Amino acid sequence: PPPFTGVWMGDSKVCAIGVHCGNHITSHGLALNCCTDLTWFDHIVPCGLEGKGVTSLSRELGRHVAVDHVLQPFLDSFQEVFDCTLVFSEDPG
Image 1 (spheres, rainbow, N blue to C red):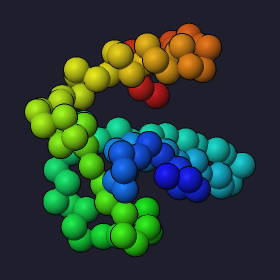
Image 2: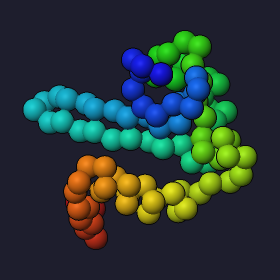
Image 3: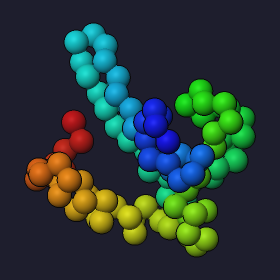
Image 4: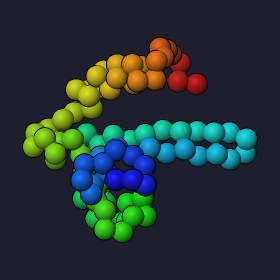
């Protein structure tokens, strides 16, 4: 819900989006909770937001949703929304 960033399902965040700027370098990323062990979030205040929760696709759909099942549709949607072509490298460096 505005003004919070990320993707929300009710009062629970299913996808976190972040940007970090420092030392003349900008990095960014996201975390889509597919089949995450959500018990870890019981020990923190996620994103510093009191009264808000964290969820996963598996919890919301009531079935196991593996990253492998979500990755390609996510990448396809990313390319469509941002009108870009993703390029993959075998070399992680």
